[in-house]
Each structure stands twice: as structure tokens, then as C-alpha cells.
Length: 395
Image (cartoon, rainbow, N blue to C red; front, top):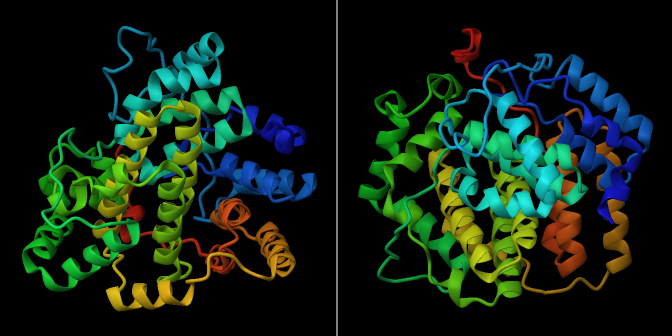
């Protein structure tokens, strides 16, 4: 059971003394780090030291903030009323605590996640990551927090109806190649994205705190614009058998990361995909899994466009050719290489790195594809915050 991996530090996952965000909209990632560090074998004292140090001063240079009590009572009758308004987080946690206690983790996820995942890119995917990590760790309280954070930070990915492009891609990699080619060659498509990036203040739907972010405003603005190249469902989502679709999506996202090694934005597509896979497994129906991949693929394109993370199609093709072998012959060497990456990750202040190793080790264990272990060693750095963070939060 995966709960055994975090048993010695489960009290850290129980901790409710800090708000889910700090300095406005920056996500409190510390419980993600606890789960990932435990999963990759970090000693208990390292995990506890990390938790204490992160709470006192995060890699962004700000401490975590105390929880924010809410006098509102959220219940089955009003829980949808405040979705996406970035308010009443503690009240949402109390509501989902009751729901998880009554339904269990899988029951609460089945009841609420399908609706809330429509906004999975909110908080730059961190609410979704929180949920995937919570389910993996089999932790009820963290699950309730994650459902609350999804409601709190909701940013809708796309409308219910999408029209596939006329010439549809046959698989995830071809979809990425076509997207890169469109960005390079299609001035109308590129102009539509650039006009959003240039003026997110024109979107009255955005919470003012998101515009302070920059990144989250760009992602939300591109999502609101509903650009067909970014939201249409490719046919392969429904045509590929489930296990093959999962394998190919993982590979495409890993190649996207290797095309921009260490990129902070693209790394989130790896860790959020893992979270969505865990959620899909919990929902455990073909229709739910199809919906999860529709949402992920639209979100991937929206985030990639909003942050201009398009490698050249040539680079992607060459990387794909470089990793044409399905399995590595040096399994023992590969495992040893992951052990080195894990031990490096224990030393990192940036918690995205142990998460990267954790996810890619799980994928490599399933696939033995050498690109996964090569990508796992490409660590990221905490990005510099924009000048807007010199101003106080808008909430």
C-alpha cells in the first residue's frame, strides 16, 4: 500500500496550520514534497527538516502563512456558488472533510472530481497535483484539501463541445509536432495567442490576483479565449487503447521536457499528468479516463501556448528518433542512475525536483524507456518572481 511509504511522516500531511497559498497566489507545495521525498526513499529526518525549513522560508523567499478561518458554512446546497472565486478555502476544506469521511477517498473523488477537474489548470495545476499526491498517499485530509483547492482556484479548461481539426493527428507526438509547426507557420494562430498574452487585463473574468501573477493570468486568458487549435479533441484520445494512450502521452510529455530540459513550466505537465492518471484510476471508468485525457491534452496545449513553450518540430522529431528503442538493455544501470537522481533530489530546496524523479521513476518502471530516466536528471530551478510581486496581494 502506498500509505506505508508516508506512514512515518503522515503527521506532516495532517498539519493544517498553514494556508494553501502564500504571498497572494503562490502555492504551498510542502505536502507534495513530503509525499515525493518519502516515495523516493528519503530518510525521515530529511523530510522533517525540509518541512520545517520550507514553512519558515520557501524557495521563493517568503514564509508560509497561517491558515485563514472562514465563518461561512459550505454544504451540499451552496458548494458550487463560490467556485473559482479564490475565497472560503477553510470552509471548503471543512465541507470536503465531511464528504471524505462519509464517502471515503474514492467515493468523494468520484462525486466531485469529474466536475472540479474542468478547472484543473487553476493554481497552475497545483490543486490537481495536490489531489493526485493525496490519493496516492491514501490520505483523507489531504484529499479534502485538494478538492477544496480545486474549487478555490478553478479555471475552466474548455467548453463541452470541441471540433477536431480537419487533418487530425494519429498520436500524441504527432499532435505536438503539428502544434509546433502551427506556431512557427500560422500567423493567425500565433497572433491569437500573442494578443491574449499582451493584455490579460482585458479579461474581466480573471481574479485581480491572477494578473499580479503574470503566468497564471496568461494561462487563464488563453483558456478563456477558446482557440480551436488548443482545445479541440484529437481523435487519438478515443482511438488509442487505454494502456497505449497512457504510454504515448507519457512519452510525448517527456520528449517535450527533454526538448527544454529543466524548464519549470513543462515540468508541471509531467507532475500534473501523473496526478491525473492517479485520479483517473480512482474514477475507474473508461468514460472518466477519456474525459481526463481530453482535459489534460487541452490544458497542455493551453499552458504551452500561454508560455510559448514550443520547441521546433525538427527538435522534437530528432529527440523521438534518438529514443526509438522501447526498452533499455541496462536495467540495473538504469535503476542505479535513478538512485543517484533520487539522492540528488534529497538535497534540493526546490521541491519540484523530487516530484520529477518520483514520477519519471514510476513511468520508467512501467516502460523501461530510457528517455524517462534521462529526463529525471534534468533538475529545475525556482523561477525569479516578476516585479508585480513587489506590490501587495490583491486579496
